[in-house]
Length: 268
Image (cartoon, rainbow, N blue to C red; front, side, top):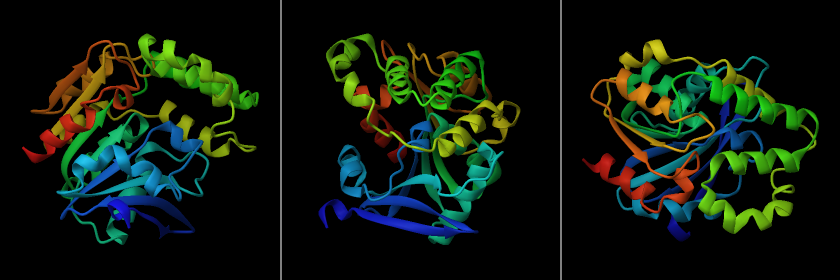
């Protein structure tokens, strides 16, 4: 199959977790997406999602996971990290490099804190060590849009708070289409993920992270704030930090060198 792209599902307790994988390498890279997973999962999208990660394929087999399909009320970021570790064990993955984006970066922090033996290297992108005012205002407004069933406003606000003005000037004409992406009759999955973010605080435990860590942020981040990246850098010993100038929360999508920069860090 092209790029060795595969769709998979792993049983975990009374439910299961969907994932996609691609690449041929002997090492493992685990990717954990952000809050968007509360609206659209990776299920069945291996070929669609593979292309941006081609740079890794020679050295790594890349896995991208959604959260598990049935999540209980009060499901926390730490719970998500525990379930992610269990799933990796079920797949026979005992050691991996882990990259988490946004909420995925929060999950990755707890994986490195609670399961250090499983993490070879850690990348935390456009994330935060704890909920802050920027996150509260942002996620709080998204919850309200979802409660009102105003999906277009939800998607437009996510775009406005994620992308640079330069990018948005080109793509605002597509906003009518955004109202259809990820539309759902039941926002329960989104609410559980969003509320987990609002209860997140790993800050005081970050000094337990011992693996090589690369932190990436954007100085125009309107979703978690750029200060959060510096807070993680100060607490995680010997971590590296890179801040994209002029980019925000969607730096992972806008910056052409984003995956190349991570690849270089992983191979060091």
